[in-house]
Length: 179
Image 1 (tube, rainbow, N blue to C red):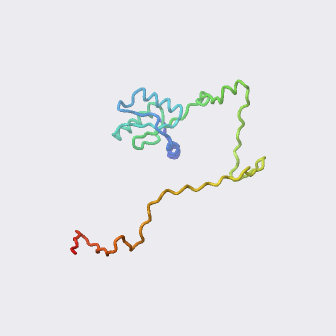
Image 2: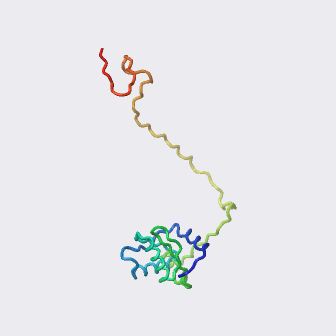
Image 3: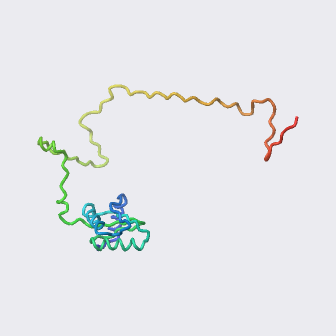
């Protein structure tokens, strides 16, 4: 099992924050097939998350130790049911991965490789070769939406429909007025 310094572990935790789990350990536990999947993903990504569907924290810790011991990896973090594992890529693994081919049709025609972009220094403005040209026509003005039909307006405060004065509101039951 590899050992990490606290600074390395902190950096790896920060990188793993945005990752999603790539392997899940189910109720059958750590089978050879699951170990093989973890190994394949460590070869491809170096840093992976593993989700464990086990309720016992101690069992998850022993599972993390077993994964790291059998695959010669380093434990980065155990948070809840997620385990973060890191193993450096073996030397020569970069050469094994072929660069992506842009387009088969462009290979047949003998097209030039795409031009590389240069990174600009922040805050430095370089004027473009072509001057900016104003728009050919004026932009359209946005028409206002037609208003939706509204409910009729309420009568002004203080005026009611009936001409008789209302009884003061009392707490409890209403009494029926006898004329």
